[in-house]
Structures are given as C-alpha cells and as structure tokens.
Image (tube, rainbow, N blue to C red; front, side):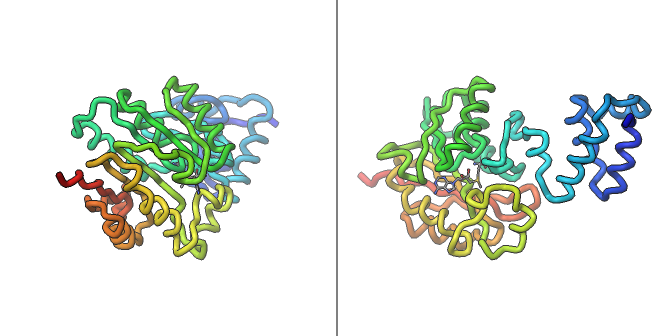
Length: 278
Ligand SMILES: C[S@@+](CC[C@H](N)C(=O)[O-])C[C@H]1O[C@@H](n2cnc3c(N)ncnc32)[C@H](O)[C@@H]1O
C-alpha cells in the first residue's frame, strides 16, 4: 500500500505519540533527517514503509523503547548500538560523565585508570575514552550479552577499552583505579515505574533493599580499588541521595556532594579516597 510522509505523520499524531517521536521513527525508517521529512511531505514512500511504520507504532504504544526499534541511541555525542540485553543509555547519565571528565581534566594524572562498573552498551566507558583519550579505561558487566554489544560499539568507534566479565568487584581482581564510575541498578523492585520499563532487562534496573543493594556492594568495595585521592562517582535514584551519602561516609570516603540531573533531581554522588596520612 503506497503512502506519504504526511499520511504517516497524521497517523502517528492520531495514535497519541508526541510529534517529535513520530518524526524520529520516520527518520530511522527512511534513513533521513527531519529537514528531509519537511521538504518531502507529499512524496510517495517505498512499498512496505507504511506496514513497518504501523509495526513500530504498535510496539512504541506498548512501551518498547524507540532505541530498541532503531537499534541505536545517541549518548554524549556517540552513536551506540543497543539491544534487549542492554539498558538504553539515558541523557541523565551524561551528568556523571561530565563530572568525571571535569575531575580528570583537573586531577593532573597523566594516564589515569578509569573503571566503569556495569557498562551495559558501554556508554560511560566509551564516552570517557572518547573525550579523554589518555585515560586507560576498563569496563565490566556480569552480562556476556551486554558486553558483546559494548565490545561491538568500542570496535565500531575505534575506542580502546578493556572489557571484563563478572559480578561487580569480582571482575577486576585486585586492580586499583584513579576513577571508578557506575550507574548500577537502583530502582526499588516495588516501584510502580518499573512497569513502563518492562522491555529493558530487569537485572539492569532493579536492586533489592529499596534499590540500594548494588550501590552498597560497590561502595563497600571501592576503598580497596581506589588509588589514594581517587574518585568514586555513582548514579542513583532521586530519593537515595542521603542514603548514598551515609554509605560513602561509612566506607571511610570523603563525600564530595551530589549533582542534579537534567530534570533537577539529585542523581550523581561522588567521594574521594583520602590520601594516606604520613
Ligand atoms: C543501569 S544499567 C547501566 C548500563 C550503562 N552503564 C548505562 O549507564 O547505560 C546497570 C548495568 O549493570 C549490570 N549489572 C547488574 N548487576 C550486576 C552485577 N552484579 N555485576 C556486574 N554488573 C551488573 C547490568 O547488566 C547493566 O548493564
């Protein structure tokens, strides 16, 4: 059945999806940009486009992330491939990347060792390596399928990152790092928001103990894996700021405050391992 850009935009609007999202779906389907859509409003589209659009529309209305349909997601200026094995990287996580990059620029360490725990698609590790090429970046995940996606992204982008498979600290043995970054699962399994995220891996999203179990493990192990003066930065839930601050202090770390995300919610807390007292 032949159709036009205009007809599909109208169909998308009728479905209730936001206009921008409909346009992004069309851009991905037609391998074009939004300017092309405007200039070719009345063009007849190739056979099968209408049917593919309908299929994507149905899946979007069932909360399948757009990135799973298109197969990729933009993160910190990098185009990353994603799959159902990986979390779709979120813009809020760029706050953690920016904070780490500011610290790396100021720390005066020539080839700093950086660790990304629970790398998923590789988003944090690859953004750091891309923006701070002198860094020696290691990335871990316990999911072999996620690591395969992350490795593929590193190869495609030509970024030299070391990938290790294993549960949190098990993956890195006794290695120590200048900066440790993580966006671990932190949603309370009882949180009603999880229903809308049901197409992404639950193991990437939810953690026991009101979402704090993985944050606890990471914080408890961090002092043994940080260089003196090294930085730990963690993404966490908007309501976990004070719990994370307490855990960081209890671990003997020097708490450096919490930064807010793009929506103004507390999101990224940091702490330093104190320099050894002479
Ligand atoms: C919230 S996702 C973050 C993914 C990616 N860093 C990002 O920001 O888009 C958490 C990641 O931690 C991994 N993960 C969950 N539990 C883990 C564990 N016990 N050990 C190592 N990785 C784990 C998941 O597979 C997932 O890729």
